Amino acid sequence: MCSEIVTRFAPSPTGFLHIGGARTALFNWLYARGRGGKFLLRIEDTDRARHTPEATEAILQGLAWLGLDHDGDVISQHEMAPRHIEVAHALLEKGAAFKCFASQEEIEAFRETARAEGRSTLYRSPWRDADAASHPDAPFVIRIKAPDGGKTVIRDTVQGDVTIDNAQLDDMVLLRSDGSPVYMLAVVVDDHDMGVTHVIRGDDHLNNAARQMMIYHGMGWDVPVWSHIPLIHGSDGKKLSKRHGALGAQEYQTMGYPAAGMRNYLARLGWSHGDDEFFSDEQAKEWFDIDGIRKSPAQFDLKKLENICGQHIAIANDAALRQEIQAFLEASDLPALTPEQGDGLERAMYCLKERAKKLPELLEKGHFILAQRPITPDEKSSKNLDPVSRGILGELTPQLQDGSWERETLEEVLNGFAAAKEIKFGVLAGPLRAALAGRAATPSVYDMMLVLGRDETLARLKDASS
Image 1 (cartoon, rainbow, N blue to C red):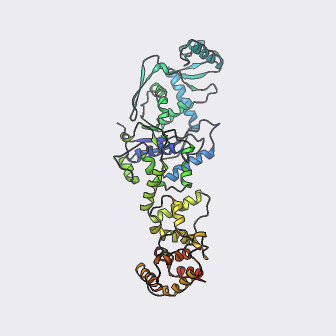
Image 2 (cartoon, rainbow, N blue to C red):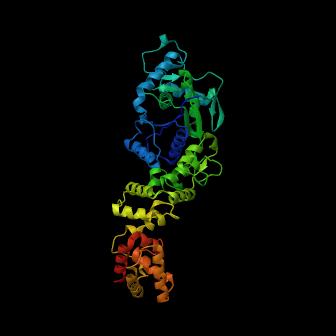
Image 3 (cartoon, one colour):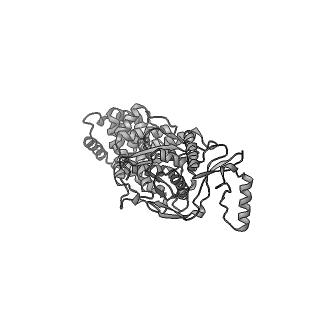
């Protein structure tokens, strides 16, 4: 039994951090963190033609937004190439691999003949058992020797035992003719050298496991625990695509979803802990286990995501929400909050969080604290500032200048004023909302007055009534 759990997330830097990749990273992070283990990050940048530094940065930023911290330095697979080459030659020396001098033309001719005869097109090299004395002075690749017969069993904690007929395994290339290592070799060597004990990845890699096991066995290395998780589908049951919503993790940040809500929702995509839908990071770390991962594809549903996010906003720490809003504005290339606006927004959080599902909704509800005097009413609220309403506000303002600035006192003053004027409170609330926020839909007038304070409230009422 291994003494320490080590998981890894190993994305290819060819684009943004796909939401499916984000879930894979989360599952690895939860499994390691919940067991006091390590969560490592490796960038699989062996394909230099497709690799871009911008894509790597996008992956790092996506993980940072989600709060998925990793242990140690970020590993570049490309930089490990000398070690990959070393292992290929070690397999050669062990007799588990061989030099193949077949040209591409010869290989294609073999496959054309096999197709014509209805045989398998998996290439079986004539150089597999050739005497080294017969080797020509010519370019060659290094291939691993696939098992001659029998079956390979992939012991998978999610899929169960998966049996592969070894006749389906070819003599896989390890080193190309230019001496560069292939991805399949690099993955195995890196996982072994990084001490990875558990490989949790998408089930589109399941068939790769049988081919990678040839390298583990050839080197006499322990095979990690495999966990191949189903992919994510859209609500229509089809593979997740742009028509189902945004694809990159950072796009969800710029749409205003809180990171805690996204972590909670992603954890529930394909994994469950009883009937629990809403939970904290600490609960997720404690509860998460491979046994709870389902075999069937998970379905991504924006409405469920918003519902979970709304619950997280409702219980979030006000100061933390302020920081997350600042990060959202920065990621969205929107103007940052001034210190005064940030302080005001934090004071107002108690009356903004209810029923808000995304950060932009908090900002919209908090418009009254972010707006600068003079307040410009929008089209709908300006209708509540006709001459009669302005006159009412002008009469109300002096009555708010004395007394304590507390909810009970404010309610007493406003209700008493409405009764004296023989008007319903709603008739008074409309002009107050327009004067204080310039909006028709706002938090309660009492909450706005308490957050704004006496001086600012009176100044806005004076502006509106003049």
